[in-house]
Image (tube, rainbow, N blue to C red; front, side, top):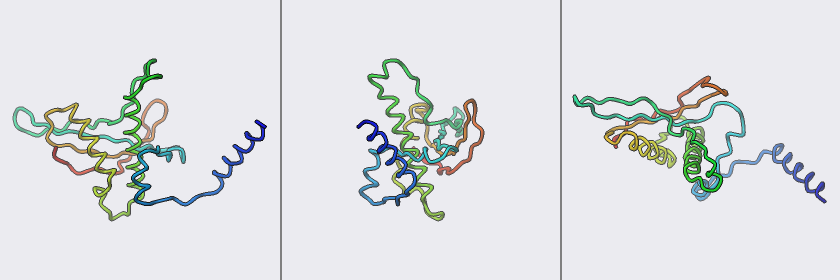
Length: 170
C-alpha cells in the first residue's frame, strides 16, 4: 500500500510539472495572497529581488546628507531556542515574501503604468521607512530601490536595479 501511495505522489508531482495551469487573478485572491508564500524563486536559479534603502538627515550645518544604501532584509542570526520560538525570523521571512510579491507585481505591470498605485509598493515603502527610522531617528527623507542580485556562495556576482522610488518625506 505504501508503494502505491509513493508512486501516486510522484505521478501527481510529474503531472504538475508537465501541465501548465493559467494564473488565477482576481481582487479577492489578491487580498488573500498574504497568507501564501511566493514560490516563484523555485522557477529558475538566478537573480533574487532585494530591497535597499537610504535615509536623508540634516547635518549640524543644516545640509542634507544621505546615508549609504542598506539591505533591508539581512540574514537573521540563528539560535538553538529558535526551534521553539522564532518571531524575528518569521517576521523577516514575511518581509522578504512582501519584497518577492512586490517584484512579481512590478514584473507584471505594463511598461507605462505607475508602480506607486500598487498595494505592495505602499507596503514596501512603509517597511523601508520603519527600518530606516529605527537606524536614523532624525531622518526627514528616505528612498528605496528594488535590486535584482545574483550571488554565489561567497560574494555578489551581478546587481541590476529594477526600480528606484522617488525621494519621499517622512
